[in-house]
Length: 164
Image (cartoon, rainbow, N blue to C red; front, side, top):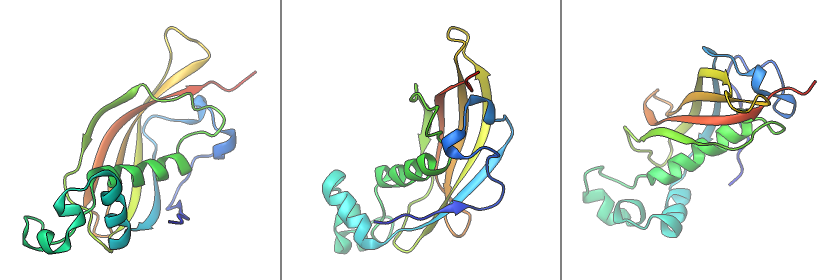
């Protein structure tokens, strides 16, 4: 799978390879896309990582609650993470994530869906215990071509402060 995505509007002022904690501003919203999901990719991911019949068996899935193959939620999360890593996480200041507060899949991803990432910076605060870094909390949503949210999560990331 080749992913080539871009900002769909305003992007961070600092490029991803020169982005530090100070470049994440509470209230900012960014969108990136697009990723088209194919049935072959859904089947391949599910066969390896989530082999439930609704993800790997088209005949079974056609008679199930979604009336067809749907992507595993973990596949959807992987697509979100790829877009998040490609566009949001600093390549020079990211220090890992202490976790996320929730992960929701309110609607399924189907073959042919075209997805985009919307990220809202909810909070950017300096660390109380380590002054060389800060914590950025975001709301990350993956949306379809019809503006339907298919994934929503509230991750936190630790980022180094700008040197000097």
